[in-house]
Length: 306
Image (cartoon, rainbow, N blue to C red):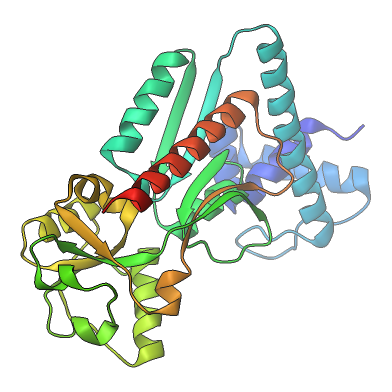
């Protein structure tokens, strides 16, 4: 039987990219990590890491061992969660990686209600760029992810996909609020607030600008979507965002979300994701179902708004 300890040393070395980093994580000497990986290679009769490299690079066999151990950890987690469920304990930890476009008062209220109903389930949430969130899900550092306009990824499965186009967000008193549909050329003389370059939203806007040969001049850029909402609500300018970001303002009638004729804007989606092949623990599965219900109800309410 293959040693779990040796597999773990290989797994952590590959995940953290160096044996030294793995030794710090495992609280053992670097020489011990190196020795255990060498023993594993001897046991299997094949090289697992490429030699003479400062950072760990797995061979094809090493990649197979890495994926085997990662899947084994995932299966053990799901098994233990199932046993706890059968004991009727309803406890566990859920790790969610989500884009900041989904953070809102409504999401917070849903989260608090869920935690009150399930006091023994601990929720861990991280927000970051789309690329980082996808990596968290791929590496099993997050059970589920919630991202906007996800690029194609062969290792990621979409549990739920909901149409969520980018729209022009304006104060209800703004002159553009009377338009039924907007062209990018209509925005050339407007004061626009936009997310920073790391945001997936901004990347789509850049792509649409290049496609149409129209380049918007942002009066304000920020990594705070709350600031963008305030910028629009104050009447100082407009923005281009998914409706979820400003759902409270839209539902109150303070803001309006106007569709555009841009194909890229109209093709964007909100996506709830997991890693392909991962069996979610019971707590993570239940929480993902709650998020699905929340998203469907929220988008339905936004569609019904005037």
